[in-house]
Every structure is written in C-alpha cells, then in structure tokens.
Image 1 (cartoon, rainbow, N blue to C red):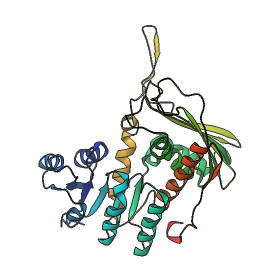
Image 2 (spheres, rainbow, N blue to C red):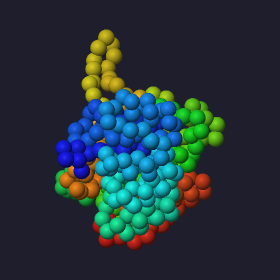
Image 3 (cartoon, helix red, strand yellow):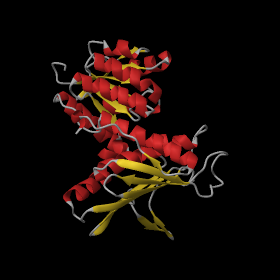
Image 4 (cartoon, rainbow, N blue to C red):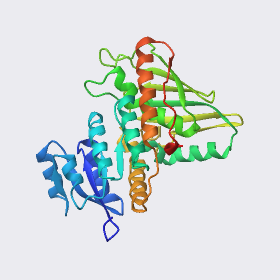
Length: 339
C-alpha cells in the first residue's frame, strides 16, 4: 500500500456501473483514490482520467495493473472479460472487487476459483451488493440469531419498470434472479440444490419473445423452499423485497423506501426508478468495506465460491426455464479455502 495509507484503485470498465464506481471512490468513500481507469473506449477513459488528479487512462487492463500507483483492482467490465482480467490480477497478487458475475458460466468460474486457490489465499470479493443493504443485513442478523426460530421458506419479489432492448429470458435468470440466488444462499447459509421455473401468461408490456413475469422456485440442501416473483416489465418502478417464514414468526424487508405521506387526497410513498437508486447505500458500503479490509491486508465478503455457486444455479435455472422441468444444481466439493 502507499505510504499515506490510501489504496490506489484501477477501475476496469467504465460503462454505467464502472463510471459510478469511479465517482464513488473519488467523491464518496474514504481511504482510496482512483489511480487508473481502463476501457476499450480510449476517449471515454481519457475524459474520466483528466477530471481526477493523479489518474491515468489505459485501454489494456494488464498495463493498468503494472502502474506503480495501483494497489488493487475493481472490475466492472462485461462478464465475458472477467476471467482474463482476474487471472492477470492473480499473476500480480492484487486484491480485486469484481462486479457480478464472477464469470458468465460455471466452468470459467471454477477455473478462476482454482487459480485463486493455487495462490493459497483469497484475493477476490464478488460484488453481490445486496449483502451490504441495511434491510438485508438486519434480516440476516435476525435469522442468524434465531429470533423467530428456524427459517423454513423465503418469499422474494423482484420487479423492474421495464427492460432494455435485447433483454432475453436467459438474462432474466443470469442478471436479475442471480441476486435472489446469492441472498438465498447467504441468508439461509444453505446451498441451492434444484430449480424450477413457472411461466404464467405474459404481460402485454413485455417485448415479443420475453416470458414475463416468471416464478422461480429453489430447493435447498437443508430442505427449505424459496420462491421469487420476477416481473421485469411491471411498468411502475423498481421493487425488491424478501420475507422469511420461520418456525416462530415472519420477517419482511423491502416495503419501506422513505417518507410515507398523506396530502391533498393522496397517500403513499415513492418507488425508486432503478437498482442504482434502490441500492446506492449498499454499493457505497460494499466498496468502503472492501477498501478498509484491503488496507488491513484482509479479504471479506462474497468469495469466488459464491460466484461459482451462483453461476451453477443460474445454469440450472436457464435449463429449467427452457424445459419447464425441475433441474438439479451440480456443484463440485467446496474447497477448504472457502469454508
């Protein structure tokens, strides 16, 4: 680390998510600075770098990692590029915060996991930001403490106002339900063993070829059942909630998004327009925790195993979506490094 105790971060990928992380590191959190920005769009990264003192623009991730001012890497590039970038980071033993997915499929995620395991220590935190949301963290504490007894089921809702062009049924699993996959495993401390997808009559708001909404059912190794209503063209905003049904009570998060008002014959509150607004504080907390842990020489948060397990469940989900059948999840034995 630098003598001043400030972490020099290379942000790789400067699209919507990457640019937001550049802003977050530069303006919001403490203990880090943007030392380099990387993108195939040379004009974009030059524009970003010119606005930040001491920041250098690159089009090659490996070159950025060799910058003497870079102590750690934040990967926000498209998923198919992650494996090569992660392996380059491992070759330099650099700490990494990798936006989800770890990689787009289980086979490549397993290769990354094995490469990290060969180092003998963790280097990667995967960006499943819901684990840093205040509501989800409170629910996790309740379940871990056994406040309402043993959890038996989870009910999830995941709604988007609309979808961008090119959004497919597989993307509904890989980019949307992947978050419910991760929080299910984390909240219950239990692996998902099977997936089924039900496809009711689609909304007229869905683009042609997209089956929306869908109901996704998970079974876990501990005998729990989890359902997720996924409705990505609901038309009215972004809503995420989770209810845990336990032996002695229930607990639900996601209903309160701020001020609830009564005025001029109307009552109600606001619904956020998208995931960035809904989880802004979670993203801030996630990156701040990563920086502090890295400065301490530690790695915390979701691991390569979590990224691999999520990819494996997604693959089973896509097969279940296409077939209408129950599909078992195939996982290798969990290595000791990730237990």
